[in-house]
Image (cartoon, rainbow, N blue to C red; front, side, top):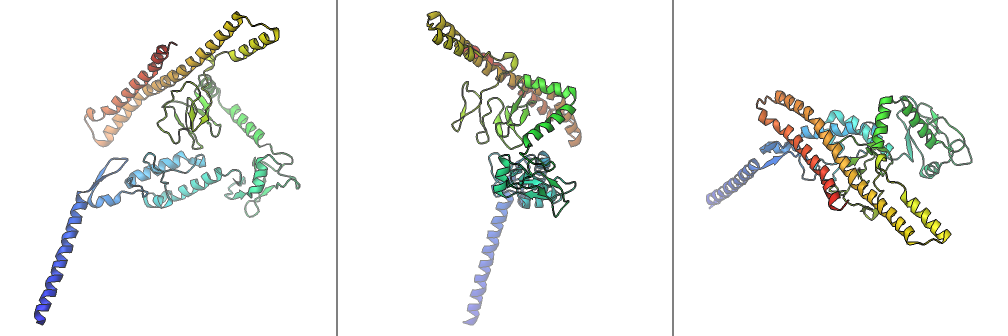
Length: 406
């Protein structure tokens, strides 16, 4: 009958609705039971709060406040485009780049600064083909075609008609004219860009205070200044570990100059040539006061005298072997001494942080209304553990040196 068919349809629809409602209830209970944690502040979020966590499609979630703080630190560390703006997800070894869409979401007031730093970084990374106009308050970029830019890099002039180079003129902007390589007034003949840079450095050095100059000289003498293996810029180590990060984006070991951009668990323990990707790195430079004599030159001179004069006595050979052994002993001592000195500097730096950490712990207690000192003592205890670890590592090199018969 017609009434029976209608009742059957109504019952079937009711069962379908009940099934959908049960599924929704199950999914809601699962969502409420799910807990996710921000990878920076470690705040746990449940239910609808989980939707506040943001990732770069890499399954590493952080809250908007932590993302904003990370972006601010990123921009402050890259002020002026001095460092490559290829900042990635805060999670270690994650290669997902921070996007403009993310900045729009968590820090819309910093989008203009992010775009500006991104452009500065791009121009700084392509100095062979583009340069900012030198005119005052001019924000235009001079772009040189690749064939001409390669000529300029080889050291061509910028004022002659027959050498393929031209004076850069900001026609649609301020009208400034300048040499593309050095940024100075147009000139003829070869570009003096390297000499110009040296002159600029000398001007800066002459205006540096005597106290700062003395500090730099002492740091260089004690082996606390090294050059970046990528851009050759000097880097001063003031504390911390031996993992150095240059403004050009290079990651290397302070002691042996090994590139550790891909191998963050680098342990500087090889005495002789250390290899990374089959590339021989530069030897460790010993401080001047412990520098070994140039015994290689003396040995070569003695060998030449032996060959020229026909001397081949056992005494001469023994003397040369002693010199070579003494040279090797000096190199061995240099290896362990530089590492002892590095951890000693790290220990001094950590000890100097004790009072600062105690003051910051007190400030943290006042701001967070924590009245129990036991809740803030872990800051000071952690720093003390760091001091002890530095001391242990420092003397471990002395122990190993004498175990090897040094």
